[in-house]
Image 1: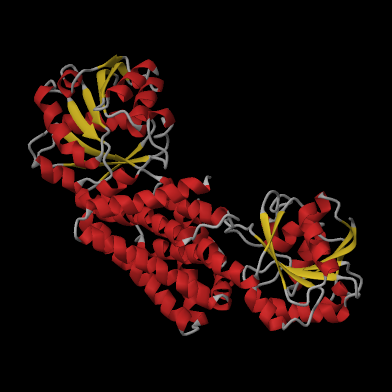
Image 2 (image 1 turned 120 degrees about the vertical axis):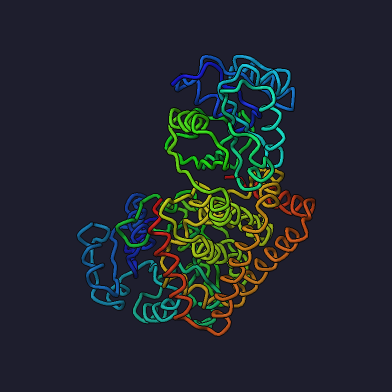
Length: 277
Length: 277
């Protein structure tokens, strides 16, 4: 199912990659776009991510068959409401926010053509200059729906992601947020903590392990601040559990409890081996 | 400077890779070896990592020009003492342990031909089946020396590592341990904690960030237990600092302090960006 017009609101890494992926998959006749930053918008147009650059959200929305809002989490609800006001009745609206419950709560089931999306794809790099047509290839996109969500909108959104190579998982927004607090949001804060705990040393005594473990600490600070604040309770619980694990193993090390430490590391190793890659 | 005989005690990932690298760099006329596990030793011989398999540490030592002890940290001091008893006077002895002060302390400056080595190279995989001739290529090897260390032994050991492609950094054993507690030992325990905090979920909602951050949790549990116990004080201090960082950012999140969280993440990002890769 090819879209007449795909509109992308927000042309950073994710929005830019969605444009490239849609182009590659021939998912739309026309790709329209808008960004709050005029320079980013002009650059996206001249890099041919877009066929048309709109002057406003209203203009980007008015002929769209699908609107993809790839903005920071805190900005998403207002952009959904604004685009819903101007788009055709049959247009579906989705986003790419890493947190979902806060968005559905802010919308209060007032936009039946909205479906929440969270593509589990990204990078510690940001900006459409790092965009890739393959960013979503083989990745999972979680879809969340409000109580009012219409089946046509849901179908439109899931077809789009599948067309650009993603695998769809549907779940409750709060459940999504609780899982992602542990598999995505907490790791980001832990990587930052590790980076700060390693003191500066000109000899740079770091191996591949440290590089891998802290890589995501190079991510966009504003974006991650936003994610933590909008998924506050689950992130607090995950942080507290992580501190608890560290406290337990530290206490085992204080009492020289070889067997406890070994069993704890072994349990972690077995879980990590189960995950693969 | 080509060695007459290189003897490798311990044929896991590191010992096996040293054998392959020495072969590739034509660093020795003959590679001898011993492992406490007869099956591992036989497999290393039949995989042609070794030219000769010795029946004992004594036999592996008696004609060696350089002895490389690639064993778990707790086993190293006894193996150094044993090999020193049987090796020629001009033979240098080194190890590959991730912790250095405990080894020098255990040896009490009794082995002037011993030089401590820590190659900052490894993998979450273990065993000589994963050995690679390029494991040390471009990697840093930290050398540590006791008060009694002879210049000829030091020269022998550093030439060997350079010949197989490594870069040498010399430093005090305790300073090494304090730095590595933060850049290597702590990250391992934190990766394990993160793996345990992420609950099992059949839908496997994990992205590349979680994969990178927790990869080292798949490492050998016995080896890392050993490392933590032999570098106890610096690891305890690093764990405690990491818990402190997490507690501070959790408290900022509890009071919704957007600016504090942003500045903290930004500081981590800037440090991580400075490290590269």
